[in-house]
Every structure is written in structure tokens, then in C-alpha cells.
Length: 374
Ligand code: ADP
Image 1 (cartoon, helix red, strand yellow):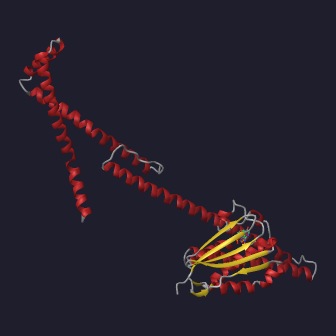
Image 2 (cartoon, rainbow, N blue to C red):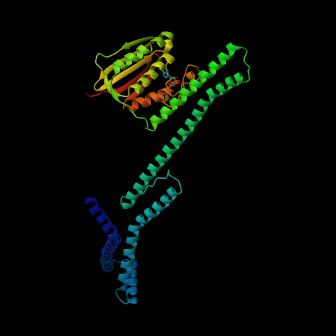
Image 3 (cartoon, helix red, strand yellow):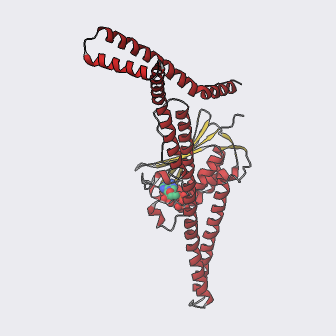
């Protein structure tokens, strides 16, 4: 209601604005004319300067020529028009500038900013147009980024699918062409082809899951879970891997239960990813620490390894899809570069948070999950 009244008031003011300007110009012109008349009259009476007597005489001559007071009407009109032109010049100039700027924006120059020396409605309009163009520019940038991400994803996927596929085709064609020496070599080639097929399968599944999570089409089957119990089970089940890799897993779990509402299968996958990575990339450090604690209404889980640190330059990208630290790119024990992206998505699906820090002392992956308020 109040907005409607304000809008109607604005329309009324705008409608009468030219009349108000004209009225103001006429009043000012009348005042000026009066002051001019008094001053000229006084000067004529008192001045001894010839040019004043001459000017007033010429004025009188003009007055006679125009049959009386018409000269005053002409001077008044000229002064009024001059004042009116001076007042409306700035408005017209700003309006023209606005039109030109909008035309430039319409031609695709979204970096253009309208800057007017005004404080009225035209300025408001210019500011609104600037805001719209800024939003449009941001949307365009976002769209370009999304397009680039899609292109990168397709490039990465094609590369990562092609590599194991080329090996599979290579080894199978050796078998097909009977180019193996004996049964042992046949088994060896079959085994490599099988392992590469497994890698391919894993990659496709990971990719499928990640896409589902990012498109928000993955649903969570949440139940109440005690994180301490869950992590205890995961570490117990990974015992043989720790032994195999010659790594000792030290746990420091909180005495309290840490109950969260979560999808057990997905959460297990997230923590398994982190623990597997800690073993894979930190086995040189000999120890892996897994700790839990309760801070306010949050459960904090840390997975710490002491191997080579992640270079500072890689840290901001570590959760990106397909991102792998340069060194691990060339190693055979690395995965697809999707593990941490999946882990982050799982944690975020649970409205939690994951972060990483790494230096020469240790690499810490910290997961924060909101505790269930039973
Ligand atoms: P990958 O399939 O290569 O393991 P991830 O997304 O799990 O992909 O990890 C991305 C990269 O982050 C890895 O290639 C590795 O270089 C680095 N990384 C992950 N976890 C750790 C860790 N605990 N310690 C050191 N580096 C790690």
C-alpha cells in the first residue's frame, strides 16, 4: 500500500516536473528583470558615465519602437528560456548519456558501467541497469566456467577411460593372435587385462556416483550411527592392509558416543577413502592416527598420516575431480583422482565439512559432522 502511494506520488511529481521547472524559471526571470530595472533606473539618474546614459537611451528607443512594454515581455521570455535551458540541460545530457550507455550494453559490452552526475530518478534507473548488467555478467562468467568444467570433465574422463581400455585391448589382442609363449604367459596377460577391466569398472562406478551426488539425485538412507563404533569397525577391518603396508594404526577415540544421523554405507565409503589414502600416500611415515572428539554439538574426526606432505600449491585443489598431485600422477598405486571429490560430496551431503592441512610434520584430513540431538 505504502509503495503504491509512493509510486503514484513519483508519477505525479514527474508529470508536473517540466511545469515546475518553467514556473521556477519564470519567477527567477521576473525577479531578475525587476532588479535589472531598478538598477538601470538608479544608474540612469545618478551616473555620470556616458555609456550608461547611452545604453538606457538606446533601450528607451527600442521600447518606443516596439510600442511600449513589449520589450519587457521579450527580455522576460529570453531570461526565462535561458534559465529553463540551464536547468534542463543536465537532465537531457544525462538522459542522452544513459541511452548511449544502454545501447553499448545492448551491443554486448557488459563491462560498461553507467556513471551519471545526477541524484534523481535517472540516477536510480542507471544504478538499477548497472546492477542488472553486473548480475548478467556474473551469470555469463558462471556459465562459461560450467562449460569449461564440463569440457575438462569430458577430456579427463576420455583420457582415464582410454588408458585402461587401450591396455585391455592390447593384451587381449596378444591372446587373440596367439602371441604368447606358454600357459603361464597367457595367464599373466589375462590377469593384466582383468585388473585393467576392474580399474575401468571402478572408475565408471565412481564417476557415476559422483555425478549422482553433484546432481543431487543421490538419496541418503539415514539412521543413527555412533561414529566411534563405526571408525572402530573400519580400522579393525583394515588391519590386514595396515600389516601388509607395514603401517601402524593408532586410534584415540573419545569416551562419549558420537551419535550422528547418517547413511552408514556412504559414511563408511568416505572414511575408507581417507584411510586408504593415508596408507597409500603416507606409508613412509609408518604411523596413521585416527582421532575423534566432541566439540560443542560437533563430532570432529581426524585422519593423520606422516608421509610426504601435500605441496601447498596443490592443497586448494585436492578435493577437485580428477585432481592428483603431480608425483602421485606418475605412480601406479594412485587411483582415479575421484576419491577425495567423492568423500567431500558424501560429507557435504550429510551437511558436514571436510578440510585438509599438510606440512612436513603431518597431513591431517579433518571431518566435522553435526551430532544428533537425541
Ligand atoms: P587418488 O585416486 O589419486 O587417490 P584422491 O582424490 O583420493 O585421488 O586424492 C587426490 C590426490 O591427493 C592424490 O593423488 C594424492 O596425491 C593426494 N592425497 C590424498 N590423500 C592424501 C594423504 N593422506 N596424504 C598425502 N597426499 C594425499
